[in-house]
Length: 153
Image (cartoon, rainbow, N blue to C red; front, side, top):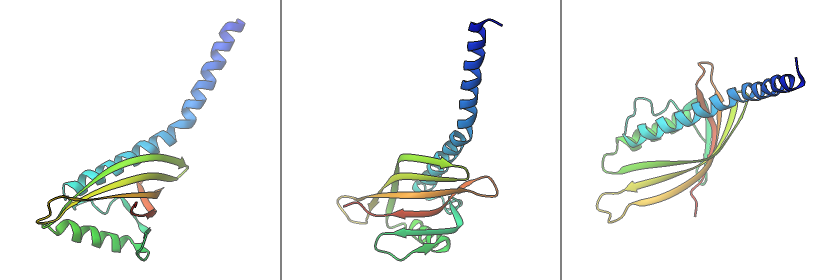
């Protein structure tokens, strides 16, 4: 084999190894982005059938100014909020960064919640920066196991 052909084979091998090494992280990032997009669409449509599916059973979350809460707490709040037809809620998602390491991932993001109250001239808009920790579950799905969020000033 000529030196040129050998160099091409070596370059292809290195490239293939690099792509293969990145595939699980890219697949995880795609799955996480998809899960967050589905949750956003479900929330905005008030579709409660899967609204708690984004969160792992062992969820612990901390929203500034409130006590730590669990999966049951969060699901109860989501279901109660979405059942209140006197208010309109809309979330917009801005993913800033996703870091994947094995079966764990960290997502830095900002949620923008727009709440329209009855009789209000303008909606209330709040920006909620946060950090979500995802873990791949036994069923292969990525779910939030921990998160920290706060309302930006």
